[in-house]
Length: 70
Image (cartoon, rainbow, N blue to C red):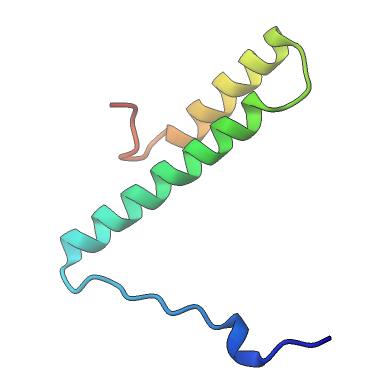
């Protein structure tokens, strides 16, 4: 059974101030990194391999960004 086209519409309301947009992007980046961290921790691999992967991926995601661990 098909869905109506309106079921796929996502409305996004961006903040008006530039500083608020930067804050929104920072929060989105933090959420993405948190998702990746949880995904890696749930993988069915050994502890050392998982730790190495976690370290490499998180360092890569945080490198050169303002999303440095607080």
